Length: 326
Ligand SMILES: *[C@@H]1O[C@H](CO)[C@@H](O)[C@H](O)[C@H]1NC(C)=O
Ligand SMILES: *[C@@H]1O[C@H](CO)[C@@H](O)[C@H](O)[C@H]1NC(C)=O
Image (cartoon, rainbow, N blue to C red; front, side, top):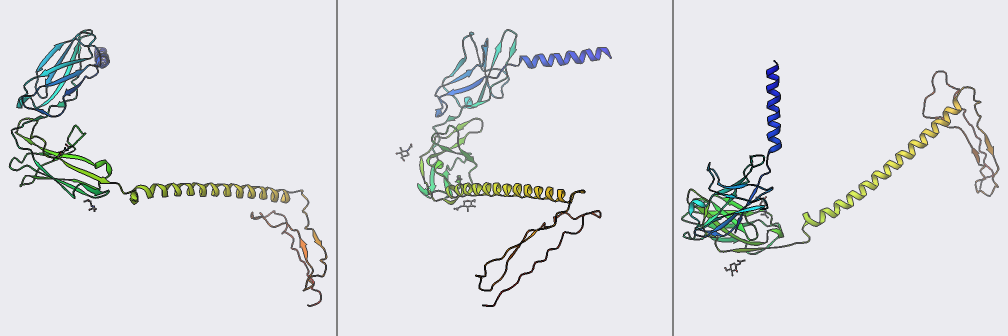
């Protein structure tokens, strides 16, 4: 039993120690990151989050590193230069670093794709429908046609490093991209490319461009009308809620005060007060010559009296005499 517990504790310590020693991951970047063609060259930078002794560059999927560099303590990035790029270089890359004290190896960086253009393929053609100036909310269709190569087709937008959409073309080699309910943010210049060859990240050149301009419509109901209306509704709603709360509070306060008064009146030992009637004569200026009497009485409360309750509230009678008829 004791050796088993010891082994468990030791195992836990080892796991904890290796966790503590885990090195932060490096990151990899490409320069240039776009527009690299076959026979061009490119630089890959491995960015180090801490000083390292050695940095290695891996092609994704390969077990051994493609290149390695010794580093000195001050370096926070290491460059790998790839010259005369070939088809098989168009893959994803990762980097990793090693430290000596205590000895350790970082995890690999996120993979970075080296997309390479093969200029021996013709660029795809492109069309835009409806053309150029469209109203907000319209569905816009961009068609890219790359017969007879029929590779996976990519839609690029100027200013974005990665393709914004991709899809398989139909049997005729046409890929149809739809931009649903366009907004001014969709304005811009679009181009297509398609993937060639089986092995690698090899693409056709980018084709001709099409330019989309989305005309903003300020009265667009979904955009401007609703938020304002919502604001009005919100303000009105909170005002109404506040008024209701104040009313409830006032009513309950009044009711509580009223109950207290009734309890005081009905409490044993208290002399039940008889209602006072005050009579006064109104000068007979009234055309019907009526005499008015003002009566002050205790109204019965909402709480029903129990069996031992005080006698019924007094009933008040008043006589109203009429004078001479008009
Ligand atoms: C845009 O496409 C969506 C989805 O297919 C559709 O519901 C909508 O009616 C279309 N709008 C216009 C203006 O054609
Ligand atoms: C788009 O292509 C036209 C020629 O078709 C060219 O004059 C224009 O400069 C291109 N626009 C961009 C942004 O590349």
